[in-house]
Image (cartoon, rainbow, N blue to C red; front, side, top):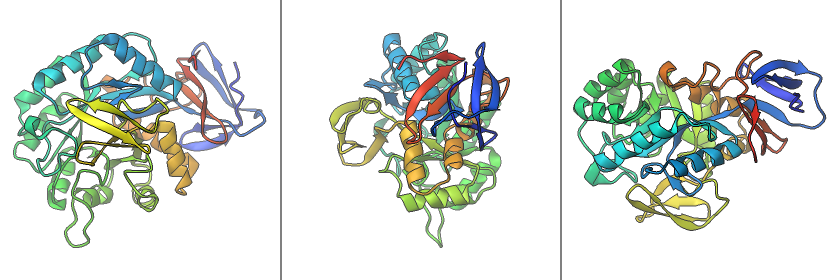
Length: 373
């Protein structure tokens, strides 16, 4: 079948022409273009999603809820997600990880990658919405307990904490990507972590030491460190458009869009109350906040983040790569559902999202099968 698009994102570049899909794979690109401005891109990849469509993943204990979340994400263009579990009581975390493991094999929507365990090895000085009572000193045995409860693809830690490098070594040995976040690290501590194998920084500028010109922190070190991937919440609330432009320029090819979505996302609402683990959240005017007024994740869609980035003046192809190929790089080989994650190429698995000329999702394919929208 032909997708009826005028261009496709292939190798990080928008190439003019239609796309054909046959037997679950991309058969051809660069065919005579269809009229209009629709574009085919690799299925969007969200590596930080705490919840969606009314479902909170930290509290996940019901397969039906997880399947409903996956279906809603797929309808909104996300074909692969790293379900994110924030700091909570250890039993809560292990239950969520086991539930996700049970849900993963079922074809119910967006592909479930290994989980992103954000915490509990985070700085008490930068907890954000993570409950301080459940934060813990980094400890390889505690990390191993989570990792063996269910597949973990990514974890976020504060690299300056005593014991953080021991957890880092254990995670790397197990094929888990380590990100730095919720951290008060100095630039020296951050650089030491990156040099030791930390791959990137989680939700850049939020819940981390920043960019003082004489005493740079984690955010500055991450932007300056070659190869380090930085993730950004482009929901219109977490970072200013000027900051998005700075990130895209300073970290070209190594910045990724994430939603940090909560249960408030994917419902089309601007107001309401929800939960993230043990924390009550309030959605007002599109922003999600915890009881003390701190931003606490988002109500964003990943396609919406692409639109925000483009509206800020970022090149369309760069913004699309930031929602596809770059986040896919954060997922180790053992947690990829197929080798074409985040990539659209002839012969590759046809996980494809089609966007109209307003960058709204109009069509989604998973393994070449149309997602019911």
